[in-house]
Image (cartoon, rainbow over all chains, first blue to last red; front, side, top):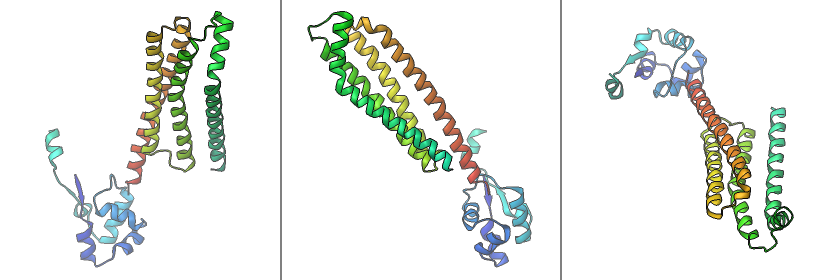
Length: 74
Length: 156
C-alpha cells in the first residue's frame, strides 16, 4: 500500500491543513481523505500542487509499505 | 433534473396504478375464477374455485412485493442517489420475488394438477425468469457503477 506522509511535511512547513487545502485547490475534506490513507488515487495535478506548496519531491510524500495481503498474492 | 423527476414521478404513478389494479383483481378473483371455470370448462361445482383463487393470491404476493421494490427504486432515483447499496438491495429482492413466482407456479401445478392451465403457468414462469435475468444484469451494472463512483470520489 502507498502511505501519504502529509502530516510530517505539514508540520515541517508550519502550515495548517485548511490553508494547504486552499492553496492547492482541494477541499479540507479531500485533504483529510489523503492524510488518513482513504484515497484510492491521486491526480498528478494534485501531487504537483502538493510538492509545490510543501517544497518537496513526490518520494517525500509517498511511501510504499508492503502489506500482508500483498505478500500473500506473491 | 426537473425532466428526470417528472419521468420518475410518472413511473411511480404507473406502479401505484398497477398495484391498485392488482389489489382490485385480488378482491374479485373468486368471482372471476368461478365465471371463467363455468364458461370455459363448464365446471359449476364451486370446489375448484377456492384452490385456484388461493393459487392466484399466492402468485400476487411476490408480484406486489416486487412492485413495492420498484416504487422504492423510483424514490431512490428521485432522491438523487441511484448508485447506492439500497438500489442493489431492491434489485436483489426483485430477483428473489421472480424466483419465488416460478417456484409457486410449478409447485401449485404439481400439487393441484391444474393441467388445463399448464401453458399459462409456463408463460408466467418464462416471463418471471426473463425479469429476474434483467434485474440480475441491472444489479451487476449498478454494483459496477457504485464501485466506479467510489473510485472517482476517492481520487483526490
